[in-house]
Image 1: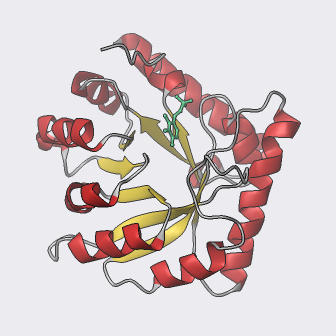
Image 2 (image 1 turned 135 degrees about the vertical axis):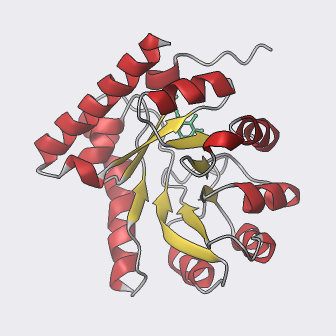
Image 3 (image 1 turned 90 degrees about the vertical axis):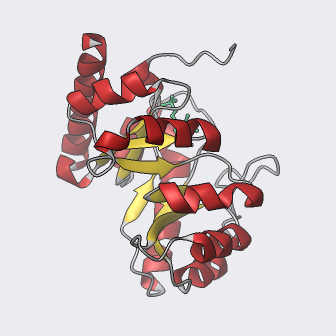
Length: 232
Ligand SMILES: *Cc1c(COP(=O)(O)O)cnc(C)c1O
């Protein structure tokens, strides 16, 4: 468990170093700890290390964890970051604070309709397919402006920004290319009048490149919790 505290601290230091290199204030970059496949006790240990925002990919697993940690609910922020099917939107609308993986208007409409009235608007990011591969989820760069404008008009959502999962790349210069593309799109949307403040990009292996290109949330799993085991 004390490993976890050291890992969280090491990731915070990586973010601080990248922010310094970019001439940015490290406080403008939030660390989202991606706890998918790890048990509620690990989330609690990360909470004890000062971590507050957690990312989850699988609806049932996430809801079980949120319920197991109900005593911390007011202190924690839960972010859904995985692929979301339209028949699974309701529990996400009811239990999460954020959804980063909105990849089509229909999902956004359902989340807005299903967001309970007693909760604040659900914070969402539009996921963009920056690598242009047919197999990847996310709206295309070409569709993004129109879809973002439609999402921004939904009553129970607050469109905060953009999210992407770039293809893994070796060097930092290569890693910066897709992150830069997402930032340029983000700037274009802001010029079009959308009040966006969030660029969700960067993971364990490329968070420095993402911070250099303007990330405001980095989503880090492996570097905090260790390698994931999908065998069970
Ligand atoms: C799993 C996951 C992460 C974390 O990836 P690591 O490489 O373990 O840091 C970040 N974002 C998304 C969307 C993920 O699914």
